[in-house]
Image: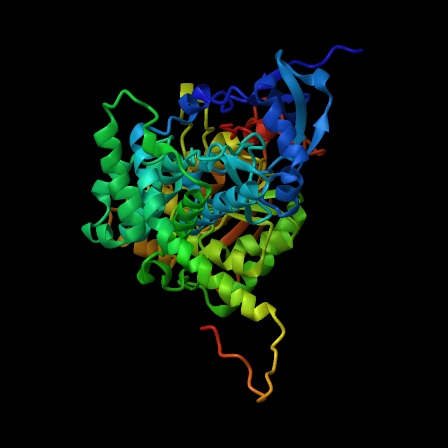
Length: 490
Length: 60
């Protein structure tokens, strides 16, 4: 047999001794270790594996050759379907996290029907695929034992319930706490931050406030398995039912979901909007590619145009309310090609966790062929004081092709930005823009938007050959797939 | 089992409170299910018409 390429273990896949995820020859695999051989065979023979995949709750996989195992002790190797773009819970809006929580409970219910149970309930085990959440950790299931408590209870509360409750009852931005607490929001913190009134909501009183108090009281207890911990089947089902009702009962306050029509708050006339849409659509088709990132996507007007042009789209916006609204609209429409993502491009998600390698930074996860940056540059250059060459550099790092809108100082929206600050932006001119972006891109075409002072540019990274291949100095384009799988906490 | 507990680390407090909450919520859970299954039983049976031509009372 020819020598196999080296296997590279995924940096985020180290916590579970039952197996791990690795990459070999560009493909993603999961090794299943002998210590859970019984659970693994029950998972298959009970029909749970097939049932979960059939219901769209678990990522499909196919068996792979055992010889691919990079480490001893493997009883099976599987090759799961890869998720195109990996996102993390702190990049999800309220409803995305809520849907992920409900998916986890649904998977638990199906597992229970097959005599099995989830053994963890990490939010990182959920990814979005075709617009819907799906479990990606095939090793999360084990045989249910009679009278055993639901082990992932605490994790479920910390990863899902606490941040959801904080978003619903305090502020939609509090989901970002998950960025600081990779193991979920500590319940004592959630209990402190939640409004006092939530003590009267039975679900939150029980699963957050009392839960936190119980943790504190028993923190010093040396006995890890108190007698009371044994639980009948009915009680376990009742607990899960109650958790589900609690999650389902969480909603964002009305003012959080009735944002004024963002997308319509533009300075465009109807003719200007129509012209911009037509040009963007044409440029997207001309750019050609499979994946687009719409940066500053707002509620997704142009993400939809990119999807219609055949792209898989990551729609990035820093406003949680816009991302929430976008997600709800996509979910209602059943649109599978757009993934709304909460991230501020001026402060993208950092790499976090063990050795800063467990969860990749947003920029490491770029998989875009084209980045769409409409009505964005002036926000960065004037709103955030980022020099134009740095804006260009960042966009070049995201994708080799760019569709960007130039908004001149004379534009009313820029006027609004400048109204409250000193104009210290002498280079903010179309010539300054051309020269700044010329450092990283070549302008392929430009088109003025009708009835407006704005201009759309289509650019390609300098150094891209006619075939679209990248020069070695370019961003880590080839590693997009690697980063894309950096997810699995197993 | 011990290894798995260490892996998940449910915490003693979480185990205790989970058992207590489960006990409390199992009471309404039990009754809800009982009511639901009663309703389902009536729904499933074909609406029998008695001699007076009346359908059985609605099970609420």
